[in-house]
Image 1: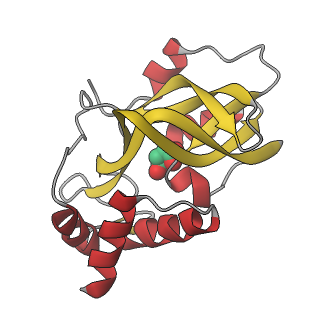
Image 2: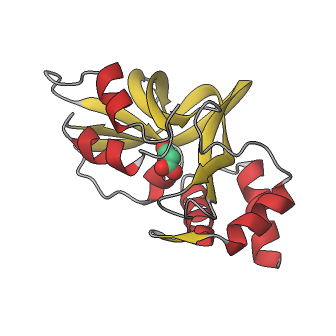
Length: 186
Ligand code: SIN
């Protein structure tokens, strides 16, 4: 599958006619909110975990030297907490462009902190996309992140801002914390 997913996402999900759509963010969408939203609230999804397994050619790296950014990996029993945003459907034009390097939109059930539930869309870069890098030990991922940089800035900034945002949400994600600690210790 080509790593530019803009056209595929438009074909897969027609959002026109909807008044508002919930989006679940688990990575940069938690801390880099460069889109208008109607409402936002912390939320969790079940059966998924965050992993720095996706290559970034367009934000935190280049095609020759990709950075490492987050995707979600199916992990039964795991809960992934992030931020949910209620947005106007036209916001997905911007989001599809921002997430074009391999991410497809999927529908997911989200649970808010008060226990209420709703359906939302989530961007996931599956292992079929060309930019997928896959698993590596946390210490190696930290070294990779330390040396990568792209049009959106240093890869390390993605990690540091994410860790801070997760702390503000009261979330300790062991995969992220291990990589963060390996990076700051270096
Ligand atoms: C997300 O944040 O939900 C998607 C991955 C990213 O843009 O970092």
